[in-house]
Image (cartoon, rainbow, N blue to C red; front, side, top):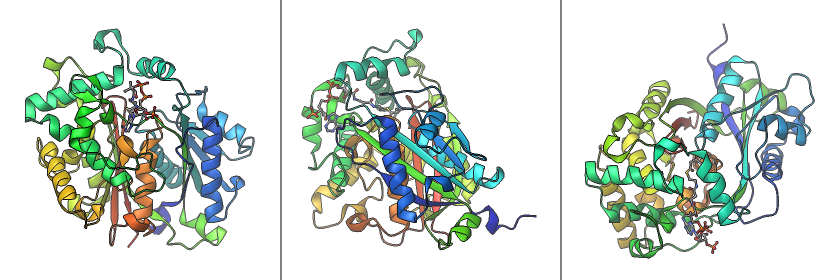
Length: 403
Ligand code: CAA
């Protein structure tokens, strides 16, 4: 019988690139990020026994993980297994949970998770052409831009059903910009107000430009390993954080017509419930939340799903936090709101399927006490949530400090 400690799977290192517009390809960004993750822990690509990649929009490849592993020289090799996972923006969290399972049940000792994209490189027109195709279905009735229009439809549902106000939606973007302005790598350097968000160009009926995920280039990598691997490489057994639980659930590719939307299309609640159960924790045990926020309604529903606000109260929760942040400039933002201390998709930056990596990396920094000026005191556990498509997939993972 394997002992309980042999089942402990750790996220041992992370790496990333700048988010600035670049001429590098997605696979080059993934390689740069993975090089940074391996170097910082003192291992090489030849120590990697498994690789999971999420696909890119700017330069997609058949069997992305095989393409990436071949490009990086990880393949050919004996006893290396690679997989592509595609759950859209939930991909990095799905991949983190898949890496955990590879270590637990498939005998792989060290798994790399990589994601990278270069959607800022694409012209606005080309980006839209590709993005529109991803969630398009003739029955959806969603006009271009399809993704903002889909989230806009859900935002209107949330307004009609729960009385969410336009200011509450805009507050999500303003709050994320306050968080991002503390992070050296964030694209958004200056906080914005609700008024500025509401004055930005309209993209759909209740969605303005500053309420859209911020298009970016960037790569990120994670390393997930077994205790045996750490011992073999002489790496301290307490390195990084423990992946203590996770859950996933799916919704439709696109939202039904407005008058037909109901709670059945959403999956974050179910994914979170499974994750809490597996980790044997509740919302009170979580000290940092990395929540997907591609559009305001996604963040509003996420704070409800994880239990920070009651159902229907997420908008009021975020707006009250905005007022508290603005009224108390002497306080550190993370002492008011333990969510997305990096600024999320709305303000940190969103290279297509990469951004949930940043939720995981920020959680890693918070748990390992390396978040610098953004540090939340005594983080024992963190929750990360990735969302794919238009509420089409939810993946939630819980990380712990192992104590
Ligand atoms: N904060 C600050 N600035 C922003 C911003 C934000 N959130 N969003 C856009 N901007 C800025 C851009 O940086 C740009 O400024 P610069 O020219 O100075 O760089 C300016 O606003 C115009 O932006 P675009 O060039 O993107 O404008 P466009 O007219 O070509 O397109 C748009 C507008 C259709 C809204 C496009 O920006 C868009 O589609 N954005 C949303 C991207 C998106 O949906 N990503 C996926 C989210 S869903 C998800 O993550 C799930 C999944 O499965 C992938």
